[in-house]
Amino acid sequence: MHALIVLAGSGPDRAALDRAWPGWSTGVDLVIAADAGAETAEGLGLRPDLAVGDFDSIDPAALARLEAAGVPVEVAPSAKDESDAELAVQAAIVRGADAITMIGGFGGRIDHLLANIGLLALPELADVPVRLVDATTRLTLLHGPGRLTATGRPGDLVSLLPLGSGVEGVTTDGLAWPLVDEPLPLGPARGLSNVRSGPVALVSIRAGWLVVIETMVGSTASARLPG
Image (cartoon, rainbow, N blue to C red; front, side, top):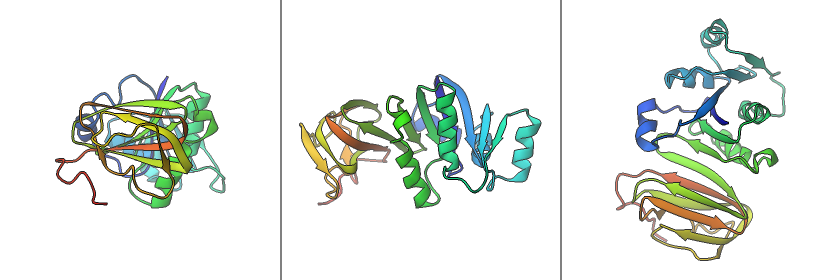
Protein backbone atom coordinates (compact mmCIF):
# COMPACT_ATOMS: atom_id res chain seq x y z
CA MET A 1 0.00 0.00 0.00
CA HIS A 2 1.35 3.39 -1.04
CA ALA A 3 0.35 6.09 1.46
CA LEU A 4 0.56 9.79 0.65
CA ILE A 5 0.95 11.99 3.73
CA VAL A 6 0.22 15.69 3.22
CA LEU A 7 1.80 18.03 5.77
CA ALA A 8 1.19 21.69 6.53
CA GLY A 9 4.44 23.07 5.15
CA SER A 10 4.83 24.91 1.87
CA GLY A 11 2.79 22.94 -0.63
CA PRO A 12 3.82 22.98 -4.31
CA ASP A 13 1.15 22.97 -7.00
CA ARG A 14 0.24 19.73 -8.74
CA ALA A 15 1.68 20.75 -12.12
CA ALA A 16 5.07 21.56 -10.59
CA LEU A 17 5.21 18.18 -8.86
CA ASP A 18 4.26 16.38 -12.05
CA ARG A 19 7.01 18.17 -13.98
CA ALA A 20 9.66 17.55 -11.35
CA TRP A 21 8.90 13.97 -10.37
CA PRO A 22 6.70 12.21 -12.94
CA GLY A 23 4.77 9.40 -11.31
CA TRP A 24 5.16 10.78 -7.77
CA SER A 25 1.55 9.86 -6.97
CA THR A 26 1.38 6.62 -8.92
CA GLY A 27 -0.38 3.86 -7.06
CA VAL A 28 -1.43 5.98 -4.07
CA ASP A 29 -3.94 3.94 -2.07
CA LEU A 30 -4.32 6.14 1.01
CA VAL A 31 -4.14 9.92 1.53
CA ILE A 32 -3.60 11.17 5.08
CA ALA A 33 -3.67 14.87 5.96
CA ALA A 34 -1.77 16.04 9.04
CA ASP A 35 -3.57 19.03 10.60
CA ALA A 36 -3.41 21.97 8.14
CA GLY A 37 -2.04 19.53 5.59
CA ALA A 38 -5.72 19.18 4.71
CA GLU A 39 -5.51 22.65 3.16
CA THR A 40 -2.38 21.66 1.25
CA ALA A 41 -4.25 18.59 0.01
CA GLU A 42 -7.10 20.81 -1.22
CA GLY A 43 -4.63 22.84 -3.22
CA LEU A 44 -3.32 19.67 -4.85
CA GLY A 45 -6.81 18.47 -5.70
CA LEU A 46 -6.56 15.58 -3.24
CA ARG A 47 -9.34 14.30 -1.00
CA PRO A 48 -7.90 12.86 2.24
CA ASP A 49 -9.05 9.44 3.38
CA LEU A 50 -8.10 10.44 6.92
CA ALA A 51 -7.08 13.59 8.80
CA VAL A 52 -5.06 13.46 12.02
CA GLY A 53 -3.55 15.98 14.42
CA ASP A 54 -4.42 18.43 17.15
CA PHE A 55 -5.79 20.82 14.49
CA ASP A 56 -4.34 23.92 16.11
CA SER A 57 -3.17 25.38 12.79
CA ILE A 58 -5.92 24.48 10.32
CA ASP A 59 -8.46 27.06 9.20
CA PRO A 60 -11.74 26.18 10.96
CA ALA A 61 -13.57 26.41 7.63
CA ALA A 62 -11.22 23.83 6.10
CA LEU A 63 -11.81 21.50 9.04
CA ALA A 64 -15.56 21.95 8.63
CA ARG A 65 -15.28 21.05 4.93
CA LEU A 66 -13.44 17.85 5.85
CA GLU A 67 -16.11 16.84 8.31
CA ALA A 68 -18.91 17.75 5.89
CA ALA A 69 -17.27 15.57 3.22
CA GLY A 70 -17.32 12.62 5.60
CA VAL A 71 -13.53 12.41 5.99
CA PRO A 72 -12.64 10.59 9.25
CA VAL A 73 -10.92 13.02 11.63
CA GLU A 74 -8.75 11.75 14.49
CA VAL A 75 -8.19 14.58 16.96
CA ALA A 76 -5.15 14.37 19.26
CA PRO A 77 -4.64 16.48 22.40
CA SER A 78 -2.50 19.56 21.89
CA ALA A 79 -0.25 18.47 24.78
CA LYS A 80 1.32 15.45 23.12
CA ASP A 81 4.77 13.95 22.51
CA GLU A 82 4.29 13.30 18.78
CA SER A 83 4.18 15.85 15.99
CA ASP A 84 1.17 15.81 13.68
CA ALA A 85 3.47 14.40 10.99
CA GLU A 86 4.45 11.52 13.28
CA LEU A 87 0.78 10.80 14.00
CA ALA A 88 0.18 10.62 10.26
CA VAL A 89 3.10 8.23 9.79
CA GLN A 90 1.82 6.03 12.60
CA ALA A 91 -1.65 6.01 11.04
CA ALA A 92 -0.19 4.96 7.69
CA ILE A 93 1.80 2.11 9.23
CA VAL A 94 -1.20 0.85 11.25
CA ARG A 95 -3.19 0.71 8.01
CA GLY A 96 -0.56 -1.38 6.27
CA ALA A 97 1.48 1.13 4.25
CA ASP A 98 4.58 -0.40 2.69
CA ALA A 99 5.65 2.82 0.90
CA ILE A 100 5.13 6.44 1.98
CA THR A 101 5.43 9.75 0.14
CA MET A 102 5.29 12.94 2.21
CA ILE A 103 4.30 16.27 0.65
CA GLY A 104 4.52 19.66 2.38
CA GLY A 105 7.42 18.74 4.65
CA PHE A 106 9.69 21.53 3.38
CA GLY A 107 9.51 25.25 4.00
CA GLY A 108 8.41 27.06 7.11
CA ARG A 109 10.19 26.32 10.39
CA ILE A 110 13.55 24.60 10.19
CA ASP A 111 12.89 22.66 13.40
CA HIS A 112 9.86 21.08 11.73
CA LEU A 113 11.96 20.19 8.68
CA LEU A 114 14.65 18.53 10.81
CA ALA A 115 11.99 16.71 12.81
CA ASN A 116 10.40 15.44 9.58
CA ILE A 117 13.75 14.12 8.39
CA GLY A 118 14.26 12.47 11.77
CA LEU A 119 10.92 10.70 11.41
CA LEU A 120 12.38 8.70 8.53
CA ALA A 121 14.57 6.88 11.08
CA LEU A 122 11.60 5.55 13.07
CA PRO A 123 12.14 1.80 13.72
CA GLU A 124 8.74 0.94 12.23
CA LEU A 125 9.89 2.48 8.92
CA ALA A 126 13.01 0.31 8.67
CA ASP A 127 11.53 -1.72 5.80
CA VAL A 128 9.25 0.99 4.39
CA PRO A 129 10.57 3.27 1.61
CA VAL A 130 9.77 6.87 2.54
CA ARG A 131 10.47 10.05 0.60
CA LEU A 132 9.86 13.74 1.25
CA VAL A 133 8.96 15.55 -1.97
CA ASP A 134 8.34 19.09 -3.16
CA ALA A 135 8.57 20.85 -6.53
CA THR A 136 12.40 20.93 -6.58
CA THR A 137 13.55 18.42 -3.96
CA ARG A 138 13.19 14.73 -3.20
CA LEU A 139 14.67 13.44 0.06
CA THR A 140 15.18 9.80 1.03
CA LEU A 141 16.84 8.24 4.08
CA LEU A 142 18.92 5.18 3.21
CA HIS A 143 19.95 2.88 6.03
CA GLY A 144 22.68 0.30 5.73
CA PRO A 145 23.11 -2.14 4.41
CA GLY A 146 20.99 -0.62 1.67
CA ARG A 147 20.79 0.51 -1.92
CA LEU A 148 18.86 3.31 -3.64
CA THR A 149 18.09 3.80 -7.32
CA ALA A 150 17.35 7.49 -7.95
CA THR A 151 16.03 8.43 -11.40
CA GLY A 152 15.89 12.01 -12.63
CA ARG A 153 17.40 14.58 -14.97
CA PRO A 154 21.10 14.57 -15.83
CA GLY A 155 22.73 17.66 -14.30
CA ASP A 156 20.56 17.78 -11.21
CA LEU A 157 22.17 17.73 -7.77
CA VAL A 158 22.43 14.67 -5.55
CA SER A 159 23.72 15.39 -2.05
CA LEU A 160 24.73 12.57 0.30
CA LEU A 161 24.68 13.65 3.94
CA PRO A 162 25.32 11.36 6.90
CA LEU A 163 22.82 11.20 9.73
CA GLY A 164 24.07 10.24 13.17
CA SER A 165 27.68 9.22 13.69
CA GLY A 166 28.49 8.68 10.00
CA VAL A 167 28.14 6.24 7.13
CA GLU A 168 30.46 3.44 6.00
CA GLY A 169 30.96 1.79 2.62
CA VAL A 170 29.39 4.43 0.37
CA THR A 171 29.49 3.48 -3.32
CA THR A 172 27.86 5.45 -6.13
CA ASP A 173 27.28 5.07 -9.85
CA GLY A 174 25.83 7.65 -12.23
CA LEU A 175 27.26 10.65 -10.36
CA ALA A 176 29.94 13.00 -11.64
CA TRP A 177 32.13 12.51 -8.54
CA PRO A 178 31.95 8.80 -7.68
CA LEU A 179 32.56 7.16 -4.34
CA VAL A 180 33.83 3.59 -4.05
CA ASP A 181 33.35 1.89 -0.68
CA GLU A 182 34.23 5.09 1.18
CA PRO A 183 33.15 6.61 4.53
CA LEU A 184 31.15 9.79 4.93
CA PRO A 185 31.68 10.91 8.54
CA LEU A 186 29.52 13.49 10.25
CA GLY A 187 31.09 16.93 9.92
CA PRO A 188 32.88 17.25 6.57
CA ALA A 189 30.62 18.29 3.67
CA ARG A 190 32.20 15.97 1.11
CA GLY A 191 28.86 14.52 -0.03
CA LEU A 192 27.31 17.91 -0.78
CA SER A 193 26.20 18.86 -4.31
CA ASN A 194 27.27 15.92 -6.44
CA VAL A 195 25.75 15.86 -9.94
CA ARG A 196 23.69 13.22 -11.69
CA SER A 197 25.61 12.31 -14.85
CA GLY A 198 22.80 10.28 -16.40
CA PRO A 199 19.13 9.55 -15.83
CA VAL A 200 19.87 6.98 -13.11
CA ALA A 201 22.04 7.33 -10.01
CA LEU A 202 22.80 4.38 -7.76
CA VAL A 203 23.82 4.78 -4.12
CA SER A 204 24.67 1.93 -1.78
CA ILE A 205 25.95 1.93 1.79
CA ARG A 206 27.24 -0.78 4.09
CA ALA A 207 26.33 0.75 7.46
CA GLY A 208 24.81 3.90 8.93
CA TRP A 209 22.12 6.36 7.89
CA LEU A 210 22.50 8.43 4.72
CA VAL A 211 20.22 11.30 3.71
CA VAL A 212 19.98 11.41 -0.09
CA ILE A 213 18.73 14.78 -1.34
CA GLU A 214 17.97 15.22 -5.04
CA THR A 215 17.58 18.84 -6.14
CA MET A 216 16.50 20.12 -9.54
CA VAL A 217 18.67 22.90 -10.98
CA GLY A 218 18.42 24.98 -14.13
CA SER A 219 21.91 24.03 -15.32
CA THR A 220 25.03 22.24 -14.14
CA ALA A 221 27.01 25.49 -14.10
CA SER A 222 26.20 26.17 -10.47
CA ALA A 223 26.04 22.55 -9.41
CA ARG A 224 29.42 21.94 -7.80
CA LEU A 225 30.13 24.18 -4.85
CA PRO A 226 33.71 25.31 -4.29
CA GLY A 227 35.74 23.48 -1.67
